[in-house]
Image (cartoon, rainbow, N blue to C red; front, side, top):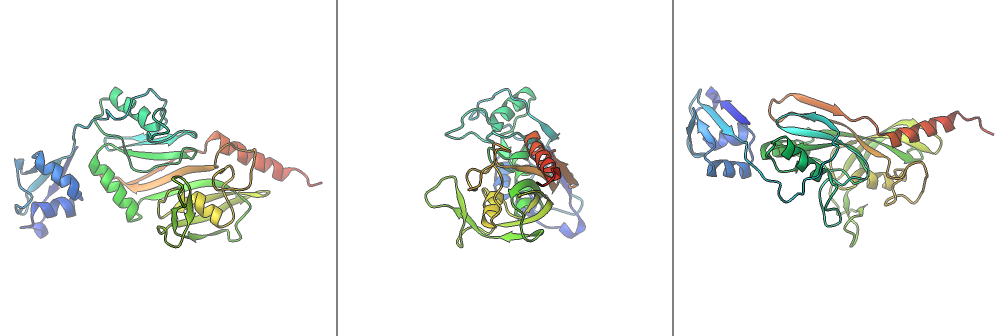
Length: 304
């Protein structure tokens, strides 16, 4: 993938490094890699980052590196691909599936399946997750095909340009039909998994809206401004309306679903290469649809 920039009059006599960082939005770390591989060109000739550019110069950078995934064992897997181009691949993740290998999950992860897919399709990229989902949270998950794209999308997340919307079913109904949960989150005690609301935790913002209230449960939409581990699950518990099926953060139980009823439903971001708005959505999985059908049916039953 080739990035190019035609030097404007206002950029005359700027350094190459300025063009790379400010105009092409290339990270410092990637610039170092590009320098060592002689991938920075001015009018098709190699140039140093300390050199100065002139009006109408053409700066080009080849960001396609041959990367290896030998640390991840390839496994044939049925991947539900929502979108793919030379920059990103967007998947609809099923429940009971881990995203990346860990000590407890060396096989059967999304990364294992993606590694096999890359090998089959001659894609020489590391597995570069842009977003992550819990094992039992379903829906949209995004992987970048090179460092530049990953850097750009992560920056969009930090600047809140990247929007993420989730759908979930909680116990009860919040008093306010919509609002913002602004509670910092930290790791709980000595646990390596559980998180909790804590004054010294990381700032965490979740906007919510009640879509539909049923008997003792509600379908809700969550828009995240931050992406802390278990953020929606912790925030729902904190306001007294835990996600149904969440065995880690809810004291209430239900037989309607066997995992937390949470789904990564929509994303919206600026494409790192062509700078156009991208909006993607993943349909609700069958287990959450089944819960909603049951709640609708129970709502229609005559009261005794």
